[in-house]
Structure formats: C-alpha cells, structure tokens
Length: 122
Figure 1: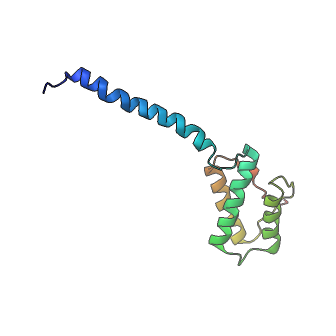
Figure 2: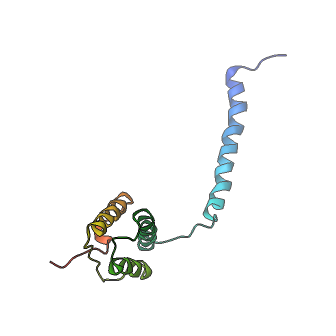
Figure 3: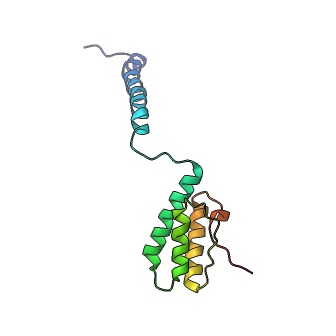
C-alpha cells in the first residue's frame, strides 16, 4: 500500500470537512431563524428585559417592605409596554435598594437608566 504525500492527503481530507461545515452553516441558518424566538424591536426588547428583571427582583427581594403604590406603579409601567409617562418614587430603603438593583441590571443589559420609571419630586 502506498501512502499519499502530505499535501494530497490534506487536500482530500480537509476539503470535505470544510464543505461539511459550510453546508451545516447554510442549513442551520434558516433553522435558527425559525426557532420560534419572538422578534422584538429595541423598545419592546427593553420592556421585555425590564419586566423579566422586575419579576426576578420581586422574587428575590419579596414584597415585604414595598408599598402597594411602588408595586402597582411598576406593574402599570410594564403593562403599558414601558411607555407610561407616570413616574414611581422609591420611598423606603427597600424600594431604593430594589430600584438600584434594577438600575444596575438595566445598564448591564445595554440600556440607559433614563429608561427606568423612577423619579421623585424634589
């Protein structure tokens, strides 16, 4: 049995691998696009993320120490598609901690803190 020169061996063995990877990428592309993920524009995505983070914050921090006004204000903000102009004032220490945690999450996810519904009258 004769062995193939290294260059011939590489060209015969690597080309099918490259072709297989290329074809896999072509086939996987449309399948990934049809994976059932919801397509959202940036304002909708920001609201989705804030709603998710608000729910997580409630789960972690609990509702004890949060006013009904604070909880209802956040629920109304999310329910409006994060378009409600009404501002929420975090008054208690726990509400301020929760608002601070949400602000950090918002920034970590590429949003501006101006997106948040928090503001207190001076």
